[in-house]
View 1 (cartoon, rainbow, N blue to C red):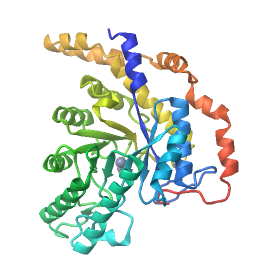
View 2 (tube, rainbow, N blue to C red):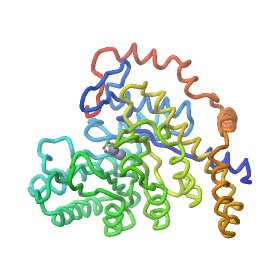
View 3 (cartoon, helix red, strand yellow):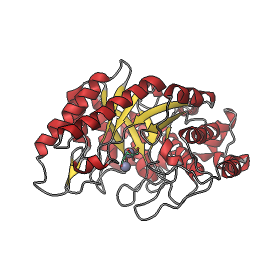
Length: 388
Ligand code: AOS
Ligand code: ZN
Ligand code: ZN
C-alpha cells in the first residue's frame, strides 16, 4: 500500500489554477442569470480567486482572459494579486468575439484579419512579460460550417503560420498551451478539433508548445485518460481545462458529472509522476457557474480534483503491476477500484487541519462573511459578465 505520509506530501504540493471568468456572470445563449456580489473588475475577480486559495490552500494562481481582464497596467495587476497571496497564471487569448472573426481568426481567408488576430496573440505575450505569466493559452473557435466553405488545408497552413509567429515571440521560460475542441461554434470542421491536431502543431513548433486538454471538448465516450497517457509519454501534455460535461461543452463543476473519469485521468498523472508542479503541467479549471453560487462552486471543484487525486495516489502500484503482469484482469481492475472506492474525505480533512486550514472549506467560506461583504460592496450593477 502507498505510504500515507507520501500521499499527504504529494497532496500538499498539488496546485490547481482557477479561471477569472468563472467568478463572473455567465450563462447560456438563452439567458444570463446575474448574481449579486459578482466581481466588477479584474481586481475583484482576483480577490475572489484569492479567497478560494485561502480556504483550499491549493489554488494559488488565477488565469486571466484578454480582453475580459484588460487593464492599463498589468505589472500593477500582478502586484495586486501577489499582495493577496496569488499570482497570475495562464493568459487566455480571445480571437472569437470580434465581428471580424465571422469566417475565422488566424485561419481567416483575409490576410488583414489574420494579422489582427495574430497581433492579439503577440499582445498576450507582452502581458505575460508584464505579469510574469509562463503560459499562453490558445483556443481558436475557427472552423467552417459547410463543406467547401473554405479550403481545409489552407486553413491549417494559416494556423501554422500564426502559431509560428507567436512561438517565436515567446521568452525562454514561456510556452504555448494549444487547446482543441471537437465542434462549436464551427459545426462542420473545426481547425483544431482534437488532440492529434493540437499535438501535430505542437511538435512542429518545438519544445515550448504543449497540448491543453479541456475535459469537455470531446465526443461522448472518448477515453480521455488514454489521451493523457499518450501525451505524457510524448512530453507534450501542458495543461488541463477541467470541467464536467453531460452533453457537449457544458463547463459544469469538475468531478460533478463523472468523478470516476476524473479519477482515471488523475491516475494517469500519478502513474507518470506528473502531479508535482515541477513536472510543468498546469491543472486549470475552465468552468462557468450559471445558476450555482460561484465561489463555493469553484471551491467545490478544487476539492473534487483534490479528492480524485487523493484516490489516484492510493492506488497500490506494486499490486497493480503484479496483477497486470500475471494477466490477472479482475485483480488488476480491483486494485484500481479499491483506490477509487476509498473515502478520502477524512484524510483530506486531517491534511487541511495539519496545514492550518478549516477541514471543510465550503462551510468555512460560508461562515467567513465574505459573500455578504461582496454582495454589499458590489451592489452598483456593474458586475462583470462572461465577455465583459
Ligand atoms: C472554449 O470552449 C474553451 O474552453 C476556452 O478554453 C475557454 O472556455 C474560453 O476561451 C474562456 O477563456
Ligand atoms: Zn477550455
Ligand atoms: Zn470549452
